[in-house]
Image 1 (tube, rainbow, N blue to C red):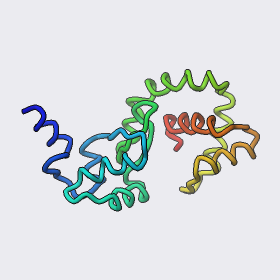
Image 2: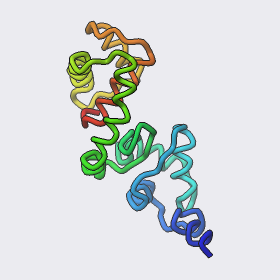
Image 3: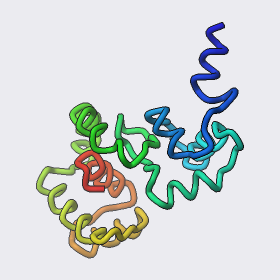
Length: 161
């Protein structure tokens, strides 16, 4: 039956993987807006469901949480991010364009934010969205909590973060 094939192909019955990275690589990408549920979407597809393994893979950077396919969250393996971005960047940028324009984010303002984001994340340093917003504000790119996500979304699709 089609339902059985779908359940097997989604690794929901008779899962084939012990390692979260291998599972995500096999799936290509998993969409999941809510972070805790996205982690569990991977964890429950393992031979032995284990959220700690998923969290460890995310902490090590083996699995990335990104907007690579459209302005929604996806989990992908680090090795796949560049080629996926090359395929999807034009479409994702088009989707983001209306957000950026509606919030008054010009190309000039984005470039200024880009420079700040690159500087504060150099050397594999990682900050929270709030901390990046504070750094942008200190650098004169005045942003509220809502705008930080748009600067970071653009930095994602440009391959900066």
